[in-house]
Amino acid sequence: MIVVGLGGMGSAAAAQAASRGKRVLGIEQFQPAHDQGSSHGKSRVIRLAYFEDPAYVPLLRRAYEVWRRLEEQSGRQLLQITGGLMIGTPDSEVVAGSLRSAREHHLDHEVLDAAQIHARFPPLTPAAGLVALFEHEAGVVFPEEAIRAHLDAAADRGAHVHFDERVDGWDVASSGTVTVRTSRGRYESERLILAPGAWAAELFKIDWLPLEVEPQQLHWFEPSGGAAPFMPDRFPIYIWDISNGIQFYGFPADADDRVKVAFFRSKVKGEPAMRDALRACIPALADGALKETVSCRYTLTPDQHFVIGHHPEFGNVVIASPCSGHGYKFASVIGEILADLAIDGATRHPIALFAPERFR
Ligand SMILES: Cc1cc2nc3c(=O)[nH]c(=O)nc-3n(C[C@H](O)[C@H](O)[C@H](O)COP(=O)(O)OP(=O)(O)OC[C@H]3O[C@@H](n4cnc5c(N)ncnc54)[C@H](O)[C@@H]3O)c2cc1C
Image 1 (cartoon, rainbow, N blue to C red):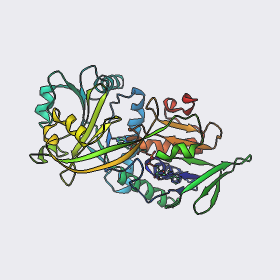
Image 2 (cartoon, rainbow, N blue to C red):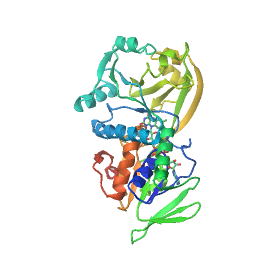
Image 3 (spheres, protein in one colour):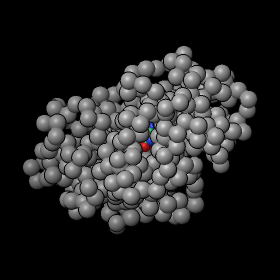
Image 4 (tube, rainbow, N blue to C red):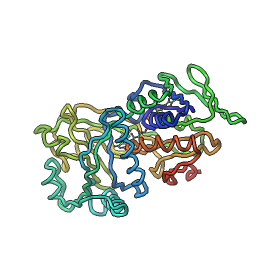
C-alpha cells in the first residue's frame, strides 16, 4: 500500500496499516513534522462536546482511546487534559451546539455564567449575559509530537517512509494496479491512500470537489502581569463566540510562558484584529507583548465537514481531507478509518457525514 502525504492523517494511516501487517510505503514531499502544511504550531484543541455536529462524538471517543494507546506505545506525551470552555451567548453556535451534543451523548459538563467563568478562570472577563459549557475532558493534542509518534510506530512495524520526495502524479491501470510517479521514481501498489492536506485539489483529481485553501494565523502573546494564571493546571482551552459568527480560541501558557490564540475559521486576520477581539475578553493578552505569529493552512469544504472515502472513480484509492480547521484531534481515529477503507473496503466508524459524493 502507498500512502501519499505523511502529515497528521497520512502518518496515522501508515502506522495503522503497518500494524495490520501490510507492506506500506509512505511518501512525503518535506521533512517529518514540517511547518509548510496544516499540522504545525505546537498545539491543537481536543474536545468531546462538538458544536459542529453531535455525529462527531463517537469518533471523538475513539480518537481519545487511540491517542492514549499511542502515548503508551511511544512513551511520548501527546495529550494534555486541561478542561475546555465553549463561551458565547446562550443561543450562539458554540454554546448551543456544544450543549446539544453534550446532552445527546450524555457527556459530563457544567454550564457556567459570566461571573462563574471569571471566578474560576480569572484572566477571562466575559460580559454579563455570556455563558459557557465547561467539559473536563477537553485539552490539547501536540501535533508535531503525534506525527513523530505515528511515523515511529509505522517504521517499527516495517513501513518504508520516504521524505523530501514529491508525488507528481498517479494512475490506475485497467488491471487495478496503481502507479505513483515521484521526483525520484515510480512505484506500484494494489492500494493508495491520498492524505495530501492543502495539496488535495492537485492530487485527488476530482474536478467537482470544492476545496478551498486558506492561510490562518496563530499568535503567541506574553500575558501582561505574568503567565501564572494561564498555566495548564489552572487555565483551560476555550473557543469564544464573540459575535456574528466570529470565534477565537486559545490555549494555556506553553513551557516558555507564551499563550497562543487564533481566530477560528474566520476571514478576520492580523495582530490588530486579534488584540481588538481580546480587549474585552482576555485583557492580559490584549495588552501583552506579541512573541510570534505563524501561518498555517486550512483546507475548507463549504459545509466544513471532512472529506473521507473511496475515490469516486477508483475503489482501491482512498482520499482524506479532514481539515476545515478542526481535523487534527481526530487524526488517531482517522488513521484507523483510512486503513479500514483501504484494506477492508469499509469501516465500522460512522463516516457518512464525510462522503465525497455529497458535493457531486
Ligand atoms: C491554524 C490551524 C489551526 C487548527 N486548529 C485545530 C485545532 O485546534 N483542533 C483540531 O482538531 N484541528 C485543528 N486544525 C486542523 C488540523 O490541523 C488539520 O485538520 C490537520 O492538520 C490536517 O492534516 P492533514 O494530514 O490533512 O494535512 P498535513 O498535516 O498538512 O499533511 C499533508 C501532507 O501531505 C504532504 N503532501 C502534499 N502533497 C504532496 C505531494 N505531492 N507529494 C508528497 N507529499 C505531499 C504535505 O507535505 C503534508 O506533509 C487547525 C488547522 C490550522 C491550519
